[in-house]
Image (cartoon, rainbow over all chains, first blue to last red):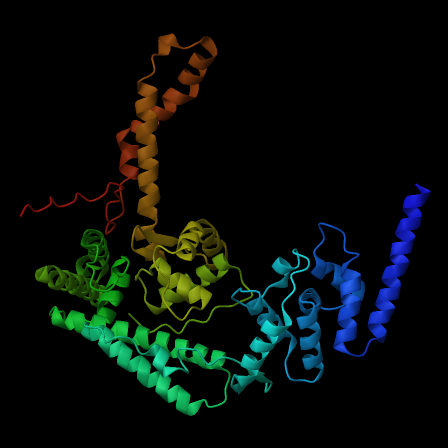
Length: 300
Length: 177
């Protein structure tokens, strides 16, 4: 029992010393050494990221960054020096290391840290780092300068160009997409490609909504429907039936029942001359719906 | 339909708002039914009309019992509802007499008919002594009075009132092509 307590106490002491060393360290490589030493104390079953966060008082993302660098060995030390020289950022390093390990994506260390000794060779890290330095520089919305590949649909018009489709609708959309992409490339020089891509997607979605409504109108005109959707909706509400989705028929049975009920209620012989307008409105609403259904059904 | 310029009081509860809205609408367009979705739109302050089958419209429909109470206690008027179409508040005593009274009179008439048929189907001799006393003393007397021609005449609908029917209208036969 006493032995266990003394082991605990010595471990705590060691952790405190490491924390002090970490606070005193000024460069990233020094901090990395401390983080690695601390990580060796992490018990099995506890996430290294959380262990570092708890004992060093860091943010989760920063703990992950330190861990990713510490696990990378020599390559990690090399990249840490580059971070100090302000040539690369922590998130970029993490992405780079993830890529060096042959994985794709943003590089979540929480899955990597489980495998100790997953070192990255210095050569491969250097190759990737050089490739990183060749990437174009962009400004984020917050004014921060970052490097990022320009392989986005919005930015890279060549990427958006596909083999010419045979469907005229698809052809039209391809043309619109290319024009939009070209316009954005001209207007948003130096902006973060992710921001451009989001802008592109928003514009594309808005355009598609507009085009769908436009196409529906065209279709309705082609079918010879001249009753306006607004009039149909109004008539539906007047007769207590749900308005139909576009080019679908109205539930005329319910409309008829409600029309008869309302007509009995509003009939001038029953309710007086004051309700004549209401009576006529109900009758004409039913006529609108009948006409609409005839037009829909007449084409079928 | 008139353009709605109704302003609800956000401090009031939904049934209170609905009652106030119905009274307002009855003043704007007396005798016109307000669809439930339009009522919901007005008292919620929506910019678009909610669907008739939407949850909030269904909730509004279910809350009409409370709205009836508020209307009676606060505004001294009642609700006239038309299934499938909507609701409205009564706008005058004549309207109340012609639209609400017939409904309640019909209920009384149907209740008396139902009671009479039940009581007449009971064989007096099969009853135990205590129930037989009750039968002779009150139930038989009540049924006799209720079935008397004078009483039945009292339950006649007022002039100008449409007959109240709960039966659904017969559907037209489907056309065979």
